[in-house]
Length: 527
Image (cartoon, rainbow, N blue to C red; front, side, top):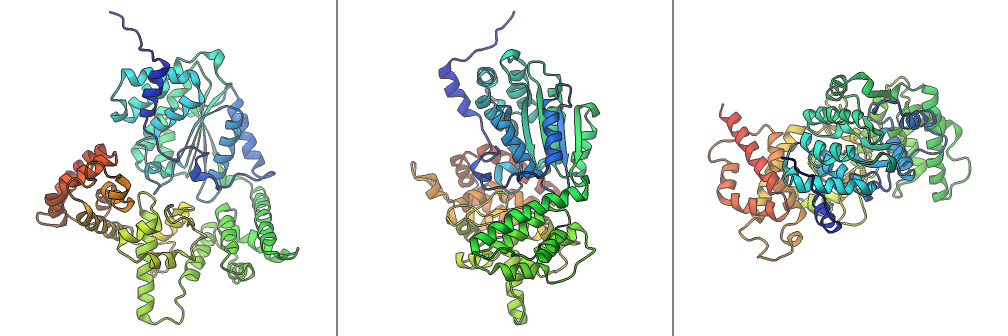
């Protein structure tokens, strides 16, 4: 017996499409990325041309993989080409992964977010995805493979060829920032299936670091499916030219803002700063943010960066050098007593160490509450770190790490050589787990919203964060579970309160996964 594919009316579209869960901030033009840079004119000319040529070649590979080491400007290029394709009505969707940014740090809402954007970009796609949701009402709880098949691949295959753009392009930035090596490799295998689409010329632009799991993922799909470009293999002269243009642009902006005379900085200072960048755009942009800080004199800040001879250092070494200078400038340990040095070092590790490994961003007030610290102490510790953190003026807006390379530096034993500032990731996760447990134990109770209270008032963001991520912090610590311990006591007193809180913030399905994770941890701990 044949069954027809269900079709949706306009009213059904309006009812079903909003059910698509999506990661807030995933799209390149989201509010989150509004102030992030794009390529300046006359920079990245060759690589941008190669990408555009690939996107317009009907016989080109389905996937373009732009890979490069940290700080080489991958995300800036991704934002630039995404904007170009958006203007040309060829951008289907984009997903900018970002570790520590909640749903942007994992693949849970990856395909549903892309489907949501595609439904906006392609009017004809809406009808088919609506039918898929109606036919598979549990699709949002299924695995990535089913979501890709039913929400994207099959609806795209049903599009009318004559109504589609010359190429439909997805932009996936920082795939290496996605938590879960198995998920990243699965995503690559699934995206490669789009090469067989006939109704639309489908293209996927991906950026990432050349991490081993991602390289293995590309090795597992046919070579003809992807075109690779190694960003840090570009001629040094071209990179230096582009960085020179960027530094001219940014330093001239600082000069005009401060009313400095033409000729600042000197030609010698400018050349030395270009040399120190060693081909890393992240060095150049971090240095400019450091120099531009309105609380300090640009003359002195530039001098601080250039006052020693570091000829011969590797690019990573130069980046590490500017990071340690920024940290030492923010915490002046000179002429401090041994006790005060220890206190300042502990504060730095507690505050900055916690922020860089949080699974989602929080405002300063909520960071302070989570860590049980005075808000002013947190503000003081972060006040001189605006070169590496986005610290908004609005107190309710979250703090955001500007580039993952700063996190990498602080966590790496071989890069952050000063033990006063190096972060012990395992210990910090353990400390955050304890903070989350204490906060929930203090705050959670039966009927916390009093049957109608406003969730954000009854469950502040720090409590919401604790409910969502305490198990994740526990998993990444070295804490073992046993009968009668703090987890046992918490679950005895607050298990139902915790589930109620998760339900109120729409995370009850995550709670089921967390309970399963706890069972696994308990099994391992008892061995």
